[in-house]
Amino acid sequence: MIENTSCTNIVIAGIGGSGIAGRIFQGLYTQKPVLLVEEYLMPDFVNRDTLVIAMSYSGNTEETLSAVQDAKRKHAHVVTITSGGKISSLGDQNIIIPQKGMQPRSAIGYQLMPLLLSFGISSEQDAKNARTILDGLDKDHTECTKHASNIFSGSKIPVVYGSAPFQGVPYRWKMQIGETAKVAIFANNFPSLSHTDVMGLGKGYNKDIFYYFVLEPESARIKKRMEIMAKLTKTDFNLIRPKGKSTAEKLFYYIHYGDYIAYDLAKLRSMDPQNVDLIEQIKAELARTDPKGLP
Amino acid sequence: MIENTSCTNIVIAGIGGSGIAGRIFQGLYTQKPVLLVEEYLMPDFVNRDTLVIAMSYSGNTEETLSAVQDAKRKHAHVVTITSGGKISSLGDQNIIIPQKGMQPRSAIGYQLMPLLLSFGISSEQDAKNARTILDGLDKDHTECTKHASNIFSGSKIPVVYGSAPFQGVPYRWKMQIGETAKVAIFANNFPSLSHTDVMGLGKGYNKDIFYYFVLEPESARIKKRMEIMAKLTKTDFNLIRPKGKSTAEKLFYYIHYGDYIAYDLAKLRSMDPQNVDLIEQIKAELARTDPKGLP
Image (cartoon, rainbow over all chains, first blue to last red; front, side, top):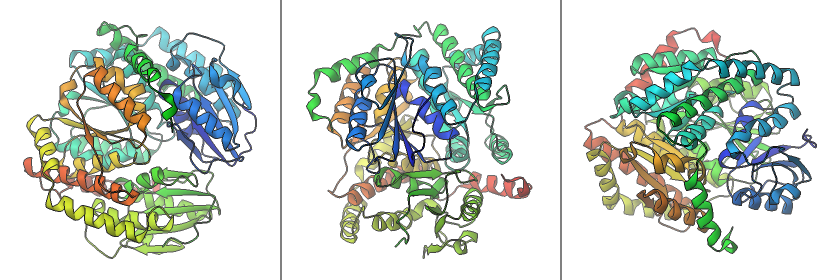
C-alpha cells in the first residue's frame, strides 16, 4: 500500500508502458489534483506537500529517473513502483514488482493495483471479481478476434474513444495495439469528439480507413451525443460494453479486451507480440549520446 | 486581469473551440496544479481554494454551463471568459469578450491573453512583439500553403506532435484543421511518440497516408530523440520552427501557422472555413432531448 496519501496534490511520473497506469488513475481519482509528468522535470509547484508516484518497470527510464531526481530536490514524498533498476532505491517508499523480465506494458496490474487499493477506488474483493471476469474473456474472446480480423483485412487505422471515468483506457489500447501489433492507432476522449472531431468525421476524406471503437459512456448524456454523432456522420462506432459492476471489473475487462485485439492482430500480421526492437534501438542510440545535456 | 489568483489549484472548464486556451495554458503554467474539465461535473477536490476559469465563447455550452453550476455548489472562485450567454452572469468575475458573432475558435486571443498576463507568463510588450511576428506571417505564409497543398494532393491525414511547454498547441491545430478544412487529424505529444507510437510508425501499414508535423522541441534531448526516431523509422517529420524569443511570440506564431494551413486547406477543398453545420446539428438535436437527465 502507498503511504503518505495525505498530500495536497499527486504527480505521477511515467512514460510509455509505465505511464498508462497513471493516466488511467487520473480519470478514476478526483479527490485531489492528479497531474501526469512524461518529461524530464517536475512542474514548479511540486514541494513537500506533493506525493510523487514514479512508475518505471525497468527502473532506468531516462525521463522518469530524471523526474524522480528533480522531485527529491523539491522535497516531494516519492514512491516508486518498479521491478528494480536505479529508481528502486531512490523513493521514500519503493514498491517492487516481483516478476522480472516482462514487457513494461504487461506489468499494468502490478502498477494499477497499489493505486486502486491505496486510494479507495477498489477493494480486494473487486479485484477478485475482476479476475473471474478476465477468466471468462480468456475462454471466449471471439469478439476481439472479429475486430482484429476486420482491422487486418481492411488495413484499417483504429481510433479509440473513451469518456469519464475511463478516459485513460484508450491510451492503453493505443499502446498495446501499437507495440504488440505494430499498427498506427489513435486515442481520444468522447465529449471532445462531438465538438472538434465531427467535421473531419462527417466531411473528411479517407474516412473508410478508420475503425472506430467507443467505450460505452457511463453518462447517459454523452451516450446520447454518441448516438446523434453516429447518425449525423453515418459512422459505424463499435461500442464496447464492459462486464461487471465495480470500477475494477469494468476497467480490467476493457484493458484485457484491448489486449486480445492487439494480440490477435499481431498474429494475423505475423508480428512477434513481444518484439519492440525500434524502441530498444532508440534507447541504445540515446545512451550513446552525451546525457550531460539532460535538462 | 483575473482576480484571486492566490488559489491552491486551478481548474479550467471548456470544450471544443473554447477548451483549447486552457489546454495551452496547462503546458505553460507550472506554478500550481492546473486541471482541465471537458465534462459536465467538477472533480471532487474542487472547493473554496480552487480557482475555476470557465471558457465558453457562446456562454451557453451545455457541459461548461453545468460545470460552472457545479463549481458554485462547491464554493470555488469562478471566473468566466465569454462573449455573453448564460454563464456571463454566473462568475464571481466575468470577463466579457467584446467581439460578438465569431466562431469560438477565432476568439483564442481573447481567451488566452487574460491567462498569459494574469499569471505572469507574458507581458504586454511580448504581446505587441507577437503582433509584429503575426503580421509577417500574414504577408508571407507560403510555407503553410505548401503544407496544405501537400496534404490536399495526397489526401493525407495530418498528425501533429508537440512537447513542453507547447504540448497544447497540436490540439489547436487539430481543431482548426478539423473544423475549418473538415479533415480528420490527430494530435499527440512528442516524448510519448518515441515510446508508444514508434512501432506502428516503423512497421505499420498505411504509413504513407499520414503527414507528420513536429513543433520544434525546446529540450535538446527531446530534439535528439526526434532525430533518432526519424532516421530509424524512415519518417519525414515536417519540423516547424517558431519565430520570436518570448513564449507569447512563439505561441502565437505556432497558432497562426496552423490557422493558415487550415485556411488554405479549406480553400483547396472548396470548403467554407466558417461552416460547422454538423456541430450545430448535434447541439440542436441534443437541445430537443430532455436535459433533465444531465449528470
